[in-house]
Length: 87
Image (cartoon, rainbow, N blue to C red):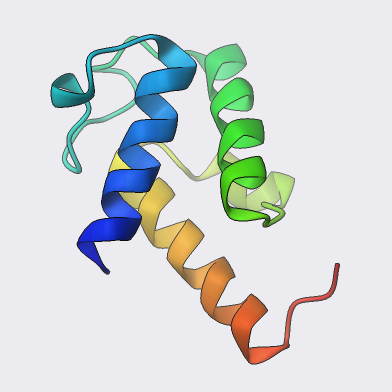
């Protein structure tokens, strides 16, 4: 996973939650950051918009950490660039 991708995901989460960027680390859990399910939806929409991807509801339910969010974005971007994702 690239540092650029991690930084973009961290930035989207920090901006959406109005948190200082340094508080949002790759190891942070949403619980540690005070992110509840409604906040999670806001973040999900922001991430989808930032990266021009679509996260399935099923995948979204399994994301509980910044790392999981970044890994999910990376996987969707890889699928999109290989042409296996349909819009």
